[in-house]
Image (cartoon, rainbow, N blue to C red; front, side):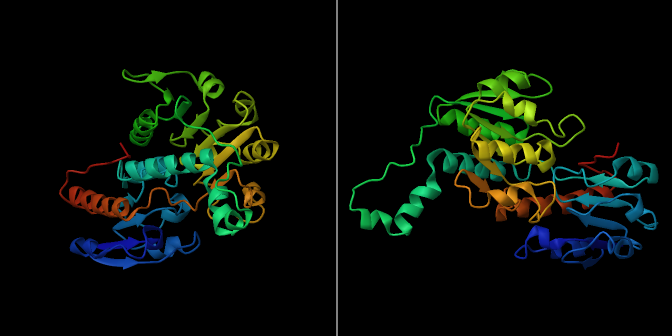
Length: 316
């Protein structure tokens, strides 16, 4: 049994991957380009992958391949229809990062709402000392208490964020495909119009791709805080950039991008010095605890598959 890990660097260099050796010979690569992938998996029985595209051009010569283990909850990098046609089982790792992503989401909102970076810069730059005034209250900031927090996508992460927002004293409203008891579910237009804070936690699908566009932004409150920890393509990055620059969006946090890492031609590159922006390098899922749970789930998925009782299967 040959197990190939194509991009172990995305799991972190501190993570112990030796447990995979229980199930076969493990070959691991720090990173793998699209051009390198077909050759590296051509004789693999199991592939463990995070970001690399798994489509026909990559998979067609992998004749022994039986199982692809996605080291994430989302699996839009994998051509599921092709895998089903080939009889390749695909599994994902659900729910391993819910608390971690919720923590980063709320950290972004709190930092943006309180202008924390600007206040710490006031002290670290020496200005607080040289000004001789006991406190600094510029820029003006506002409490989260009493604000409306709109959550788009109400799975495990959305629910975790909702609990924290409720603890802050926010009114929490939710947009999800199927309304459920115990939360205030609204349509997307209502959420956009009424929210002071919006956080996005939905999967990337044909329905959600580009859902936050110029038209959606026009419906938002002036000065809204918006955070995307879902997928870069759920919003129009150019439209978001324009709204930040114009001040329509008062605070923007983002951990996910259509191209990762993004280049100097990306619209967000022009926002790197913007005080109302918090950009992070797709790290919201990646606490040590979260990554450990993730790889433990991968090993459990392999164990279950080899025992003819597969779980977390996304190919039906």
